[in-house]
Image (tube, rainbow, N blue to C red; front, side, top):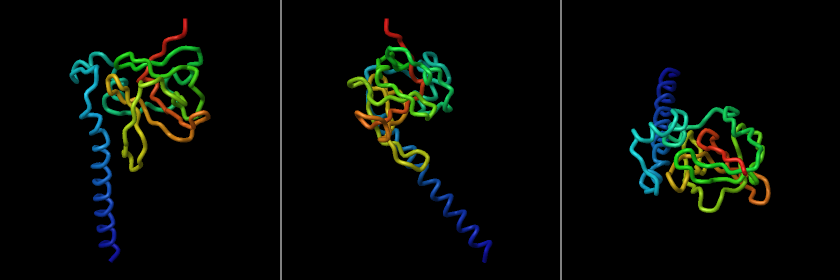
Length: 164
């Protein structure tokens, strides 16, 4: 009887995994159907971006925590999208969230948009660039005042321009 339970349990787990993976793959469908002012072919994106940037911006990857130099960027200036150079965040809204990723409590006006993300069996809001659609990270509701939001961004998806 234990063998049968083991096989049935394994089958149920495999089906659940398949359902979650199906939901995961649907999370980027809305963004994939959107059109953006800046577009390139896959080959062009690969030429324009480093492999890490391509993985994050075009494949919704995530860098390892504490690996981006922008996590420790504390100068006054502006953070921009590496895919299209759109300015995304002011350094005035950056804060140390202790997560290992650059975090902000507010983006610049009309710089980012959100979409549902159901990857890894959880539902959250993914953030992408409004100009090129590049995946930047996720937004959570555990940030500081005044917004209470934490835009947890992949540093390798962004660049930084110091204030002159």
